[in-house]
Length: 130
Image (cartoon, rainbow, N blue to C red):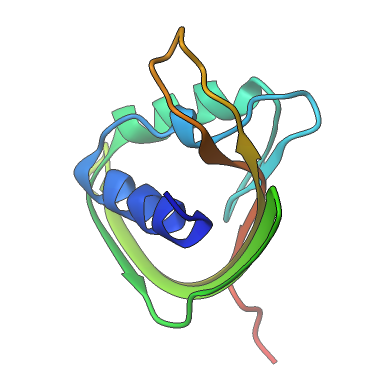
């Protein structure tokens, strides 16, 4: 799997509501910024589980994905329209900017994962008003 296909698989997994933590290296130095939160290390796992539990009907539309791979490191940027319904039936719809870093990790027999790309940094933001 390439870094680009990993990012696309993450988007697909977000749409389907399947578990997202396996896409992250949950090391203490890993950070994930979302529209309204900053999660570090193992907080990422709980934050993603809560997000999956409290949201549904995700739309994720990638418009400008750019990915560069160098050896065991990759970085990306994208413009993504994302929308969802929260557990209070409120619809959220945002044009967002994504960027991040991935590293290639070796096999994890305990999780049944072959060598794969994992996020070690992710930043999702909404452009501010000019």
